[in-house]
Length: 460
Picture 1 (cartoon, rainbow, N blue to C red):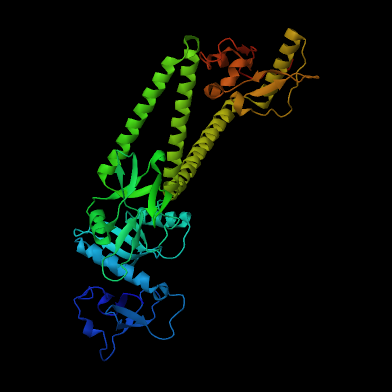
Picture 2 (picture 1 turned 45 degrees about the vertical axis):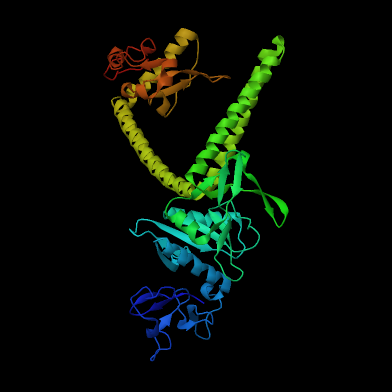
């Protein structure tokens, strides 16, 4: 029983509007010949215009409709509540469209309210089916992601489990004559009593106040979440985290909490002064620790509540940051690989200045020096391998059981700044000319072996 239908020429028709929202007369589609080719916006099945015995205009599916069509499966109460919501929105001076889907199909609003200037939108959802708190928060998050406010409306006698978790109200239908009334979800803060009190308002008045910004969702502070109410001569206690309320009530809650904190602090101070002098310092320390623990616990609880409502947004932000980090990591890796490539080219050029004979001559001189100075035998590598972490010099180790590092042979002067650990080890170069290429770096750590720049004819 949808209230909207698709016309091949006029587009989307709304049976709740006198002109069907398209400057058309009802008689053009109701019992007209030939019949208007209308389809359901949800399942695309053929529909035709009808009027209920109560005078309600709607669209009815043709025989053989798909059983999965959500619009056709909605109850009579659901349809009547949507009509009441649309009427309340229009009475407030806003535009109301029924059964409005998202562009990507991720949601479908029972009634979408739009401000006269078109800058604001608010979804009004008549919710009769059971739903978990997690699911309704997720659906609320999808609206919030598109900057659409939302109010969930339940017509059930008992408050649903999601009441107070998302912006919503419970309404009461008139038994015979009268108006729909909001009897749960709206509250005012009683400063004198120090708590929230339920407020009942006509649905039309409530919608006007919400759309005009006079009411907005407000979080209950932890101390004020328990609210009592007398229903059928029985006293009930409810837990409410969220209310529709005025800015004045929101301020009153904050001011009352500040006043209560001041009174509590004053009481603690008076009690502390009565204690014995010898225990005063210890008592004050414990009181401060307890006050700080309570404050941190309350702040943590509030952060958790806020975090639950932001998970969807944060998840997307995390994904974007991950993409950015991956891109940054790739750039940094490429830069590092380029630095390593340049360092390797520099090192190869540095070692390329020596012939194989000069290289062998250099390592032989290092071995001879180790034996002469320390009676130490060192291992001379057959194929010297440059070590990047030692400025592409070749580490030389002692022979024997301990295999200790003796020194670094011919590190590259231009790469010494990239190897800070080199400053803790002894370095060997061929001659004084090579020492000069190091400048002030590795001062006192370089030993030159006095070898000539040219190849010798004999080896020592």
